[in-house]
Length: 171
Image 1 (cartoon, helix red, strand yellow):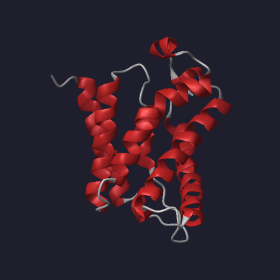
Image 2 (cartoon, rainbow, N blue to C red; image 1 turned 45 degrees about the horizontal axis):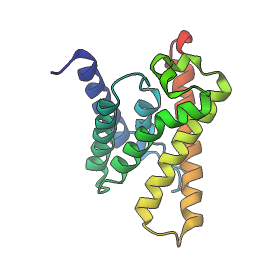
Image 3 (cartoon, rainbow, N blue to C red; image 1 turned 60 degrees about the vertical axis):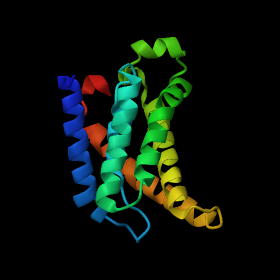
Image 4 (cartoon, rainbow, N blue to C red; image 1 turned 90 degrees about the vertical axis):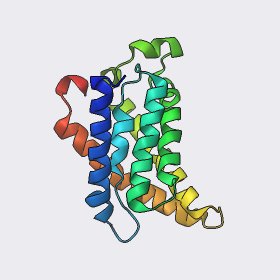
């Protein structure tokens, strides 16, 4: 059954995929750094919601970007992986136990925890993305350069979004 929350998530995914494909993929800094803002959905998805639906939505998000960018599934892989790791990273950063994640809200994070959480998630996503794109460790320096530069560029947009558009209570 298609609930209102699920429909809202699908619309959000569609908007993020379109924004990524037609706006943010065109932004290119020194032919190295491109912001991947679509991972905002994964970063901000409530930890207490249905895990299987979340992983399906992560896959659809990455797959949508893959369809527009003709990248053969690397965005779906990276998105699904950080979606899977999200609860573990939340637990590591916040110090909560797994049974406490059911009551966890992102507003429980302080500013330092937000920075660590988003930086880890974005770095892992980008590293997997560029590693799968390269399919080799022979250009590890290039992979790390692109990972770090794209992560910095993405984090700039993520923090800009968080500062401007999130409600004060959720920060």
